[in-house]
Image (tube, rainbow, N blue to C red; front, side):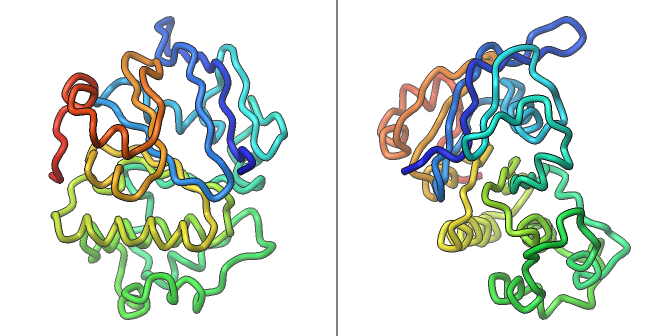
Length: 237
């Protein structure tokens, strides 16, 4: 399988301190990959760097074979990379329908509302509801639907299960599986290890701004030593 995203030896610093210390990772075409680790080890910083919100001090990022290091966020977005942030970034005063129809930079090849509702049937039943009245799981579903409206080739998800009840986490897992069936590649940052390993095939583990393990999700699941040392809780929260 061809590599879609390739990060090579990425270094990023804030206010004189290093946050990422030589991160290298890749996501294949249509791959679903998790980036695991305790809070504060640099996972979100990695995602923000990929989409151009932060510039690496050294290293390079390639997407679909082209160097995108240092590009502006709108340029990265137009290449086909979308980020769903931990705060979900929906418009609370707009309805579900209005949220999905907010103009985007890349107007070519947008998914239609019927296509989005086909992926997320519950959103159609909620289309007249304001974002602020949705549950956490419904807001997450809406945020993902907004992100894939532009038909991205790669979706970055930052802690999609954060603050959700266990039964709603199952809905998030189903959503990620749907994305995979739609041939969308996913890079998932997730504190819920069980969820991450359920929906991904490959995993990276970070610690102190470095990749300390890379391998199959199946191997991580069998390595309680890795989980206890670098991640913590294994079960669903």
